[in-house]
Image 1 (cartoon, rainbow, N blue to C red):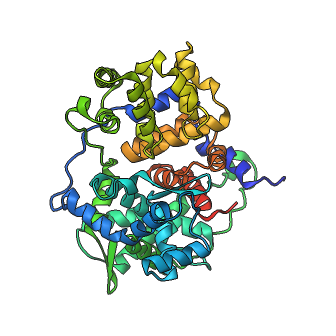
Image 2: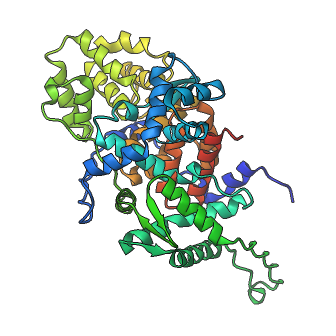
Image 3: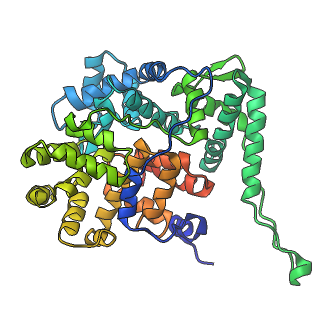
Length: 465
């Protein structure tokens, strides 16, 4: 029997194959699609302003590090390593381990991004003091990445760790439904049941010798027994480290933030960007945010109304300025607005086609402007450009859409299976790769896909090959 590389084995798993890819125009539409109204949270849930205050407290040091690294330092400086950590510790009066931990959190929460080796502020950092929605999204990204924040015990097999990560949502649901402290034995009992279910779900049924006339297949050796109490302690400590729960003597309790986050996951919703009134008089950024929840027809009407009182040149410059920002949703919407501008925008769009983050959008715009069918325009993109656009659209969906939209967006990838997609996503180096993969792993209902995506997020985060 020949051996196969792990990626080849994964690709052969039908559960990790993607359905036939849809045109990228369909993926673009997922960003601008209207989302359903968010249901009201359970009674007793603090208002968003209070939840955001708590999230700001959890991420206070991460914000300080992010601002120092991306704003206060020399422009174009790289990640915090070596002497940069020494400088940060001295400038912010933090211990070295605090600098390392806070930098890690800043990256996972989307407060900073790396572009060509240079640290830049993420859009959440720019909106941190004025936008509670951005703060809560940043905290949810950290919550989803709890297993990266708190390293697992080194003496435990990675497969056992992955099983516990996969089982933790059920533990969180028990905590949420209990609406109060839950004892460690009760949590351990649930964890053991869930891990046993995972083993049973993955067990192959032996052949029936009476039905086949052959001997039954040799039973597979039982999975090694892994002591779950230390792994439960690790999971609870990791969730406590991101502010999702508090630990008492032999018990755990969800914090208001943790309770709200579990409810959000159960309802499969995200906080939607609010549409400001008076879009026509707003800046391009505010106008686009106001159009984010409109269907394409009304959105185009709003773009035309916004363009009417402005000079064409200034409007194009303002839209492209927004497109260069950190919010992927606004980047896509800016080019939708530029489609309404039409011919006067051609030279400006051609000029930005060499900008790495804007190139796929610009090439699609130009292809459609030159007469290509929107359903076929994606053919002008290279595989790498298509992957970058898929990742940028995924970032927009993760930030502004519902969890099931992110799962459905997986089907729009040009790759034929999940391992190939993950390998190529890592290669293009999109600055939001870790956050998007963590969000996708948290949202995907298939454990095999979620595990593969979570592993890729860990490898990108740690720089592993």
